[in-house]
Amino acid sequence: MNLRRMRKNHALLFGALGMGALALTCAGGAVAAVQGQCSNCHTMHASQDNQAMGSGPFDVLLLFDCLGCHTGTNRPAGTDPGGTVAPSNAPGVLDTVDPFAADTFLAGGNFYSVEQGNDAHGHNVKVLPNGHTDGDLGNIPPGYDGTTPTVAALESPFLSCGGATGCHGDLTVSRAESEAQSFAAIAGAHHGQTGVVDGSTVGQSFRFLLGMPGGEDDDYEFTTSASDHNIYPGKARTVDSDIADGGDGALTMSGLCAKCHANFHNSSPAGTSTGIEGSGWGNPWIRHPTDFDFSGLGGEYAVNMDVYNPLVPVGRDIDAVGAGNFQGLVGSADQATNIGATGGNIVICLSCHRAHGSQYDDILRWDYKDMVAGAPTGGMADNGCFYCHATKDGA
Image (cartoon, rainbow, N blue to C red; front, side, top):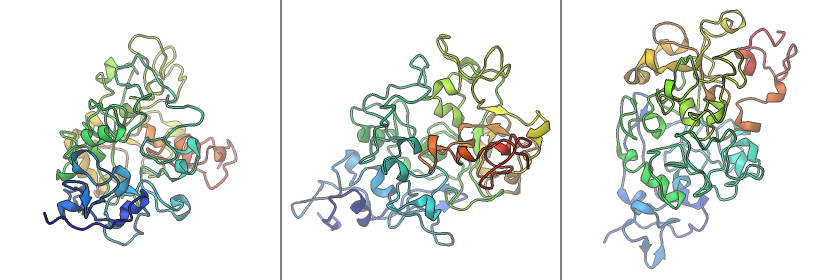
């Protein structure tokens, strides 16, 4: 068999990036199908000249685990393809140097700080060599509610990239090993090509989050502006119960987060735990609202809401926009504003947090210590918490 020869110095995870590359192209803001030699990603026997190949063997004949292609420094602005690591051309989620100091991280952030031992700075995914268990929380996420149908037990196989104890792919897929589970959950997605991310398949879902529509920025928000960013799905809720939200969180970004952090999103169906609301929707809030539209509140909330701020992203109403229309908003002038027929100021979990990791505690997008009422520090006037609570910064 004429298998492509791979370099043999692959004992370390980061060394995997030196072997072979899958090629990704972008069309209309969406990631297209993998292109290139099959042997860049797959191996028939996981052996070449009686030497092991890649860091596997893994399911579906893969050479590497998820981090094998998603580790490294993302290319700087102005390069092609932007927001990806060499040579895999895949978006990097684990850097080998500090991506926050270098400003080379993407919309989802980066696992770098977690891997350096800062558990509060990100999700402790099992595939991480060192940072896969939170020293304080173990494997039980904050806001965990075992009575909510969208929650999977995380004790085994710990938090994974995909599947029943992860975020990406088919969340009904469960395996004993987190790597095998992740591979099975996203099987075939890298070979799917999409121009509209409507959630119909894993490959047709926003960042392989099955069922979720959205608008995918073509460089993964390596560069951002009011008219250059992802479009996130949200829902203008009036109550926080699972039933009112369609059972599984209505396929919103916050609904996905509620799979593990249910108490931060909704009350349990059995009424054994309290979600966002106290004695009625917003009367009073006992936890910060998510999937909530603040467009009609007026006052301080109206100061900044008509201009999109990528550091404090808001969601578009999944009901008003429609699943097939999210992708069409990417690159259009309409995405710079949050008002009108295709607008909406939906507070979502990602309005405050990054998905993978950040340089701040609680995976926040900014330093919470800079949120000082009447005296913003660190240039946080009309930013961070003060983007919505615009009159409380004293500026």
